[in-house]
Length: 295
Image 1: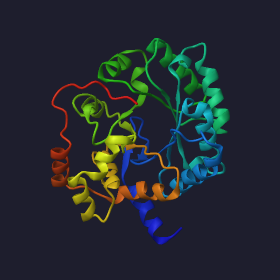
Image 2: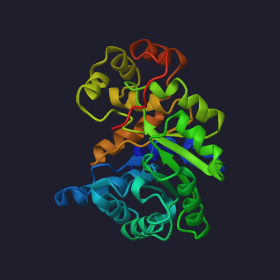
Image 3: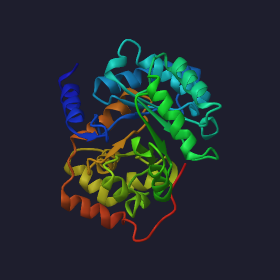
């Protein structure tokens, strides 16, 4: 490994988040949404994930929904021979989250990932299956060793309160939601609630999904001014901001090694309190309850 890459890896490993069960993870991981959709891109995607693991971004997030399971296959290929280095996260469809389908859905994900166990298995979003039933089935998967932990995704504060009121609901390890500088609604109540529960947030699309919001991050004068101070890119500053609290795991997706390296280097940016206040002025935090952003 090159010296600069070793330096990046050290920074990634140093900036961590702790799950409720005491497991410590790097704040910046890797997403796989839209991977596996084009056969011509698969080799590059596998290499990108492997390079990210080399740089210490060992949290890999995928889902049975992504590419109809093809993203799981890409992730499975990337972790061959190095499964023990990786904290593997996958997600189950809401309509598979009951006693009729959850066990089979998990088995199918395990086959695509070519592994015996998933480190963290999430309910992708809330559907019609009662939460108590999903929790019961998740606990069965844990007891069988098919998964080590479970959590949820796209749950708002009321959903989380309901979840932990159920039997064994307190075993939920995380809630994965949309979060970036241009979408800060969770800071009003959901993020404080999760901090109170010592339950980290997983942030998907931490650099916005694209379009106008991504352009806003790229061109904002405040972000660019701060980026110049760190000899970094605007997106690196935006990514560093998401993990400044040490209570968020960001999972940006990068399909090539150059972008992977850019994401990893964000871990070396430690924003000051003054810089965070400047970003608050440019991207004001919420002053009222906001609907949960979902993409």
